[in-house]
Image 1 (tube, rainbow, N blue to C red):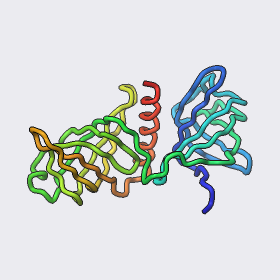
Image 2: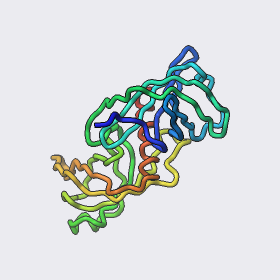
Image 3: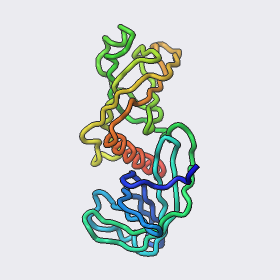
Image 4: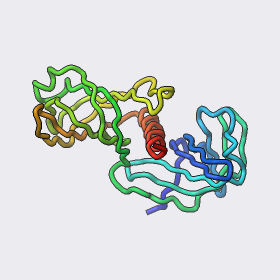
Amino acid sequence: MSPRTFQPGEPLSLEASGPLGVTAVDATLIGATATRILVSLPGLHSCPETLYAGVEVSLRCIDSAGVHSARSKVRAVRQTSPVTLSLDRPTRVETKQSRKSFRVPAAVAFLLDASGSSNPAARQMPVTECRSSDISAGGICFDTTIPLLVGDHVEVTLAAAVRPEEPLTPPITFAARVLRVRRIGGKEPRSAVAVEYLSPKNVDRERLVRFLFKLERALRTV
């Protein structure tokens, strides 16, 4: 098996830690040579003082195998719009979590449309706001009173924000399939449900991955 490498266009998380402080930003690989990689920093039109030639950085990406990380060093900063960085090409990429899809344990609000359910009782229920117990680039787990069945087709719409000033605009809607349903006891019938997204568009998946990076960084700073 060939070693894992970062791919052009792949959404990355870049973190720098040096004498001037810690910075975590989104990045996109836009070019590579045998010894260097070039990344852009979407949305950044001036470079933070913590990102400078010589500072060491970590790079991470998410795919179906988990989260991959590597160490590198900034060699040059280009004050373009957006900012671009020239980095040492990583010699080793490690998979820190090997599972179907890296998950973030967080309560994220989303809308669930069960009108495609095979259960008439679920089809009759209105679009309902739910909260995840964990979320990934491949699916979402949550509790609900909607009587879903394994194999049901539903729609999940994400419009949450890690911070109020950074909402998911426009919202992301995924067609999804119910993988697991576990009934939970209590006064009101509830179920713990897991769904997987069905063939999301690349642009939607990229936006979701960037959202997950921000979400995970926010959880680590709490």
